[in-house]
Length: 65
Image: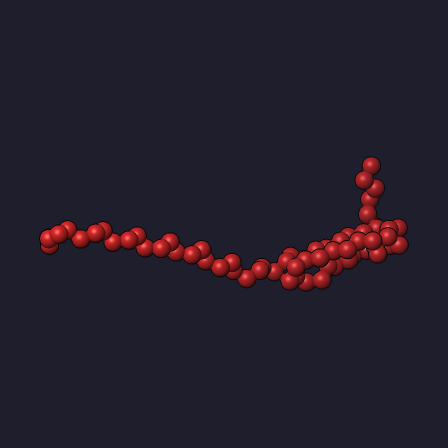
């Protein structure tokens, strides 16, 4: 130890947070609809970011009630 005593060193700076990873791919959306609702399909807007286009399948669907 020397004389006089030295001063303490400074703390290091905090590290940075990492960057976000790339966006993932959206999943497949499948819409199964009854033929009677075909005129209303234009009001449905679906989006799956970076994913495939939605699939529309026409099938006779049983009544819900």
